Amino acid sequence: MTRRTAAADLAGLNVAPRPAVVAPPQLAAQSIVLPVPPSANRYWRHYAGRTVVSAGARAYKAGVALVAQHAGMRPFAGPVAVYLHVYRARKAGDLDNSAKVLLDALQGVAYNDDAQIVELHLYRHDDKANPRVEVEVRKISE
Image (cartoon, rainbow, N blue to C red; front, side, top):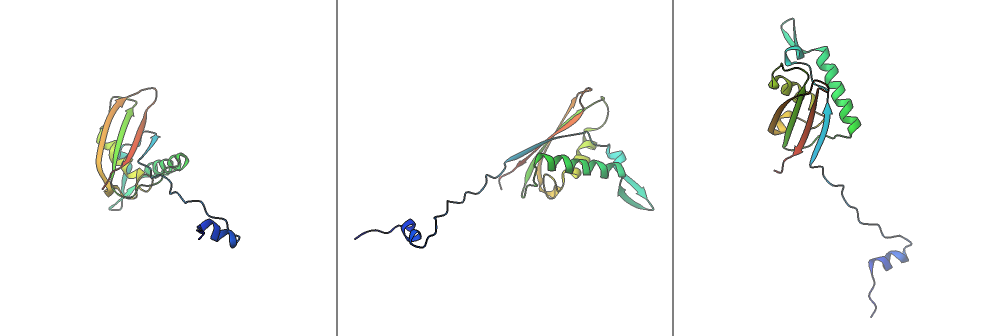
């Protein structure tokens, strides 16, 4: 009695066997370097009793989306941890002002909704020659 294999069955049909499909690895973390955001004090404007995002804030968000797209970032689904290293040019300004603006700008870029953030780590540094924000977003196991 001869034993037939799947490859032998396919050979009679003139069909080549397919290679196994391997899913791409899931990203565990994504990093990006961004310019320092505008202050939260200049992020929103009040017009006719309404609060709106300022033109500068819209431009910053568009720039973040462009840099992220160029870096190949994709929004995570599920809970995330966000690490922000803010390198400021002057020894002035509140760290928490930067955080709100950055987290808002990263929405739809590094995660779908800022409600996904379950950990937030903020660090302030001084770098007069090269102010920037180094962002790392890590996927958290559920």
